[in-house]
Image (cartoon, rainbow, N blue to C red):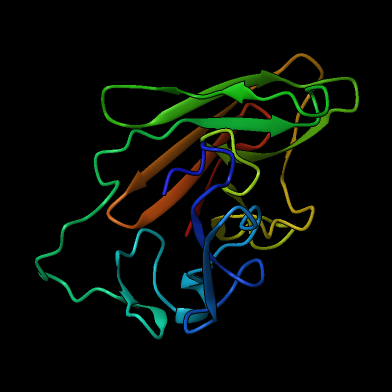
Length: 194
């Protein structure tokens, strides 16, 4: 179904962020914000894991289920050729404003920002300009990268430095591993991985 067609014809669960085996209804126009959530963190799988999704629609019942795929399993993978856009959301920007990251030939996304008068800035990463696809640290100290999801809960990476110093953020997403590198003259280089 085409979600851009004003919601007509959506097949969806009864609740937002529904687990598999939840009741499925539709097609109808009531599915706005009602979606399924594949939670790789709960499943204990690394970022980038490919899931095999099965949707069954029979006359008397509808069912959806998913499992992480088995390595080397032949699957028709949807979205593998999608090119993502990544942006920074940070304290040096106005609320709602994003700073797009630039991708280089090696597939590394980069962005820079200038330290403000507080001598510290906070940021998180937004995938495809969607507040439902955020990358952020697992804890305030920024140890592990989590996401993309909408469970950020206010967590951001913290960068400290002198006023007017330039800080650089690099994002690498490859082979199921997400890494964020933060570089600044005051902090040096810090690398966080999923």
